[in-house]
Amino acid sequence: MKVLITGGAGFIGHNVAIYLKNLGYRVIAFDSLKRSTILAKDRLMENGIALLKGDIMVAKDLDVALKSVDVVVHAAAYISVEESIRRPVIYFRNNVAGTASLAEACLRNGVNELIYLSSAAVYGDPKSLPIGEEHPTSPISPYGLSKLMGEEVLKFYAKNGLKYTILRIFNAYGVGQSPSYAGVITRFIESALKGRSLVIYGDGQQTRDFVHVQDVAEAIRLSIESSTKNETFNIGSGKPTKIYELAKTVIDLLNKDISIRHAMPRAGDIRQSYADISKAQSILGFCPSFSLKQGLINLLENLPKKRP
Ligand SMILES: NC(=O)c1ccc[n+]([C@@H]2O[C@H](COP(=O)([O-])OP(=O)(O)OC[C@H]3O[C@@H](n4cnc5c(N)ncnc54)[C@H](O)[C@@H]3O)[C@@H](O)[C@H]2O)c1
View 1 (cartoon, rainbow, N blue to C red):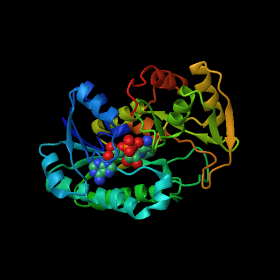
View 2: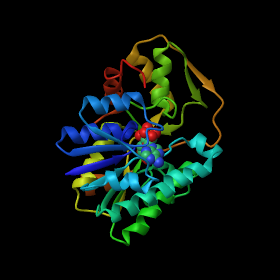
View 3: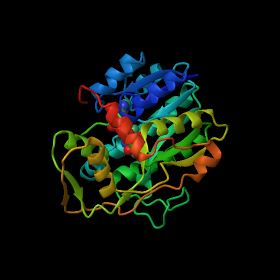
View 4: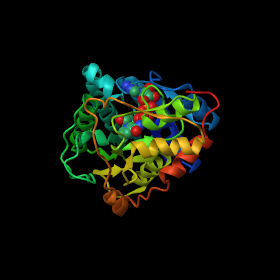
């Protein structure tokens, strides 16, 4: 089976590419390379994965890339919440119009299956926990809104025959996350390795659901293999982690004498978040294999010598 991964030279994209290649899939990474990392490109090359330079907004780039592809994993997007607040239009253009451009190109080229990497950001401030797929969607950033609009775009193209699977990913972490847009785990590890104190915005009692990128990759594999299509699934660990506990665990694992510093809470930061993953468990057979501690150990053991 031939899989095209848009955003294939990004954090999640290249990890998924390597994961699927190791399982025997034929994989092509497709990326504009505008926000990719050198590390991701190096890892793709080391693993013998072809990387096609192209933009999901450009029809002819897609027409070349989609030849004899069976399924597309759509990971290409702009992903910074903070940047999306400053520059919403580029988020709507790239993440929403880009998804439409891709969906249309898929149908034009006879590729009728697409796995869409959506985000927990579509839910906004949780009204109830854990967050199930039926939880109301009310994104609080242009990024979250762009991901939700991307979902709706795919539901529109489903009427023309496109089969989609929407995976609403919570906080992914693992090797190769770009420090510029990275989540808190990469930020903490970067600081700790430089001997700097870890900065927590607010009291650190806020929770997030951290999911290892290999578990995300497995959820994608399960989605490709599943006979259930046109469904939406939460992909997380299903467990809340307090940011203060995360900071302590990073410090313990690195065995370093590093302090924790509290800074002013960031405007718009969600207080509590974790996923109800029972739908993905029962329909896809998704079962996250990494505890946070195991995932952090795996990440620390595989830290690149060359920084992204
Ligand atoms: N990282 C997370 O925790 C997380 C959580 C939820 C959802 N997601 C979703 O997963 C996907 C991948 O996220 P990531 O963390 O790997 O991001 P990333 O920024 O590391 O990778 C995205 C890649 O997409 C490429 N790209 C962007 N626009 C493109 C375009 N128009 N054409 C071709 N390539 C383009 C970039 O160059 C980059 O390499 C995104 O869709 C994101 O919304 C990520």
